[in-house]
Length: 232
Figure 1 (spheres, helix red, strand yellow):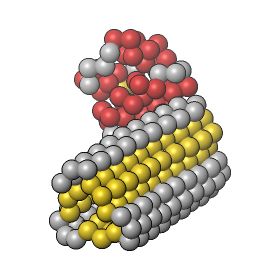
Figure 2 (tube, rainbow, N blue to C red):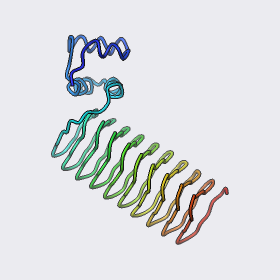
Figure 3 (cartoon, rainbow, N blue to C red):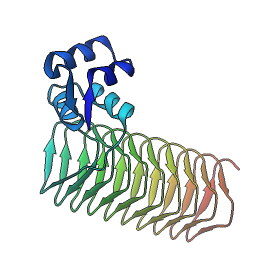
Figure 4 (cartoon, rainbow, N blue to C red):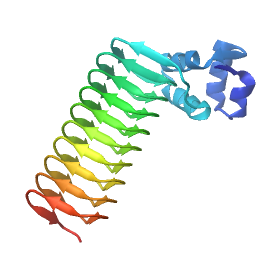
């Protein structure tokens, strides 16, 4: 995709960002090439804005490993090994990694995320599609998944948790805020939520269920250990 000066101007960019584009790309520039150039220049917010305006593409980039300060990619990223990002990472399509994924800032994925190892985000973690990880998933901030979640070990969330479909956890759930699941929630360990816990279907934990506020389920609630809610 080629972005022209008129196309970008129609989106009402900030004056500084538009001036940067004119100085380096004159009248037009390749969409992904422009995103890469913005990230390389330290203008990650401008790159994220551009992706929000023009959306994802069907491009696929395949790598053996990925180690970068920041990433904004409009298509699908396929990484055979590990992913290590020193700042934020935004992927317009799917994120597929055979190893682990560690992002120091926010991690946003516009499609599915299928990760062979751990997933760790130093900020917010957002996956528009399904989330599948072989080991732990951890976010220092809010965690939002639009589809189903299947996680091999713990799910840890430092903020609010929103799961858009059924969730199956190979170990426990630890959430520092409110937790909501649009499907059924099943955990092979303890479920600990400091706020309120709600699931549109059932909640099942092989261990204990402990909640700092209220517990609500559209179907049943089952705990292998203690069931405790400080609210209703």
